[in-house]
Amino acid sequence: MKTLRDMKIGESATVLRLHGEGAVKRRIMDMGITRGVEIRVRKVAPLGDPLELTVRGYELSIRKADAEMVEVE
Image 1: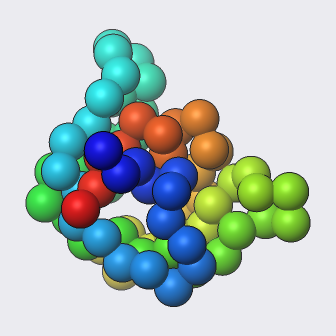
Image 2: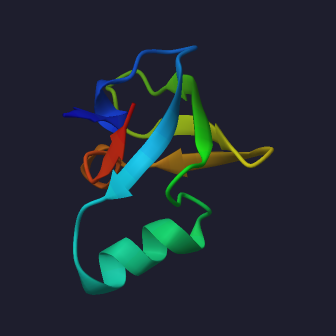
Image 3: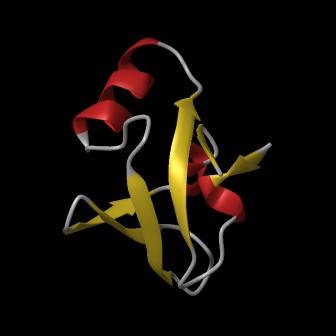
């Protein structure tokens, strides 16, 4: 299983499913990360946290802990 956290700078992937429960999963979905969406990793902070992504035409920063809950292909 490959997650968003495993992706390298410049890679693109499609979201397969979201793991997690309740409010955390809802917050990720509210940011626009839902099944079938294309995501591209733009940058990673020097210490690896957070990741900067392009989702639905806008830039989004997400923590590694949240990125681990997003399964991609």
